[in-house]
Length: 330
Image (cartoon, rainbow, N blue to C red):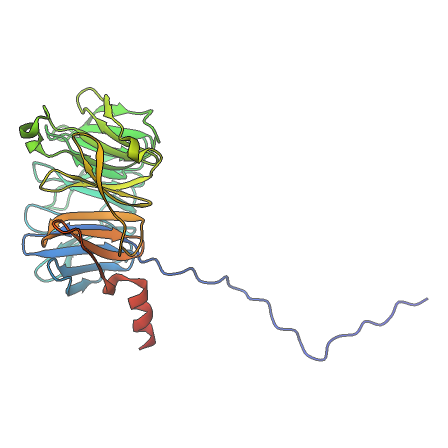
């Protein structure tokens, strides 16, 4: 029997889609920096903005080569340095213009920034660490073989040495010689995502000297910077991913995690408060305490604030997904 003659539909079937659906916009607020003029610089994955630290009112938006901001810092001359996923830029805060960019870094994906006691700028990326003279813009030193590779976060200890949070623990660097001093590995969680130094006035409160507070993917640790010894691991934060750490002027440690914002007594390790209501998201990325009378909080879904006296919270709609959606409909 002969094969039957195939039949075809009367109309051509619709073509298969050639592109995948576009991902949702990312509204995380990843970096916050106050300045002496009462401004708060807000770095998000929607770009860089300047707001009034008291009211939250927008004062300006600064165009950059990339709108994905990873870090912000203020230098001694008053310039704002911004690290994005496309490099490093220097901003004149008065004119809100870029005055320098296109620096030679190990990688253009900037994750952390810090100004040391001499006024030099340390730039951490996903491929190493660089030392930049903020006056000339010259890159003075580059660490491409940094243990742990990625410089996720930076802090200075009470002696002025630099501590670098990496994928494999901590690295201490002498800021004067730019030489590595020690490496601390085998920490619980291994990957260090956040680091802060306790205030120098802690010695007045019975603590012999400032210590390091270190946040990993599953623990919060207090470490002696001289010996590398882990002094305490608060039980309430066991198993939590610590994303950012900041001390306020009262000496409390604010702990941002992937599942909420907490306030810690650093002397006892006790959690003395948790902020759960009226935040855009429980995933915390950035903190700016004692700024305009508030603690400013960057989350995965926008910007919020917390009163440090009443602990009342509020949201800045301009940085939220809902605000953007409403604006697109107008």
